[in-house]
Length: 194
Ligand SMILES: Nc1nc2c(ncn2[C@@H]2O[C@H](COP(=O)(O)OP(=O)(O)OP(=O)(O)O)[C@@H](O)[C@H]2O)c(=O)[nH]1
Ligand SMILES: [Mg+2]
Image (cartoon, rainbow, N blue to C red; front, top):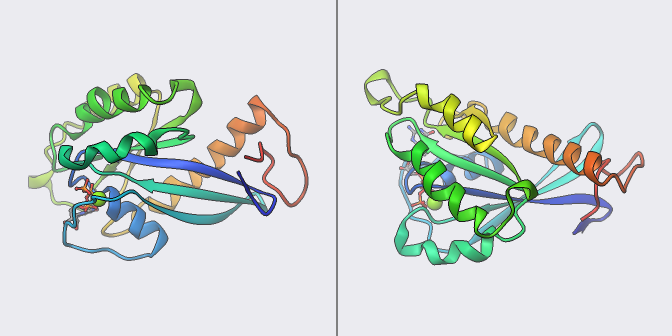
């Protein structure tokens, strides 16, 4: 897919219900935060245009449903993902292990693992000590197991949200440049034009 000559990449955000998938995207695209949990029941994509090293890149960011009730809609969304953000939450003890044992497995039924770059976002990093029940020792293991880079983020405060998506965009450009390397000019991203 091409964005008037720039590259467009598909990024899918996956994870348990209530971990903050919608909030992370909302913070990044709209710059807003909502305290209310509105359960995601429909596939929604939003786009963000970035300049990476003076080159145009567009991220097409797909929100998904974390609750099993609405999960059927996720299958079609997962196809063709190039970047995947697995979201866990500081106040949810099982959310990181589920990222590996549930969500990582699910997407690998739709995409070969080497077709996408994985990131782990540990959300709600603003919460106070007494609510931080996610075992921190497990983050390194998860990162190794999923070959993913980890970001501690907060959709509430915005901590590390731009950094997460800018790293995704940069990584996607580098990945497609090194593996395919088709486009190379001063306007377009120096990567595969999709
Ligand atoms: N303190 C805090 N709360 C957050 C943060 N991100 C999200 N929340 C809250 O967590 C709840 C769930 O957020 P959502 O973004 O709707 O979660 P989701 O993962 O999209 O949930 P589903 O659509 O059901 O899969 C909401 O009440 C948010 O306000 C954060 O960074 N910090
Ligand atoms: Mg949601």
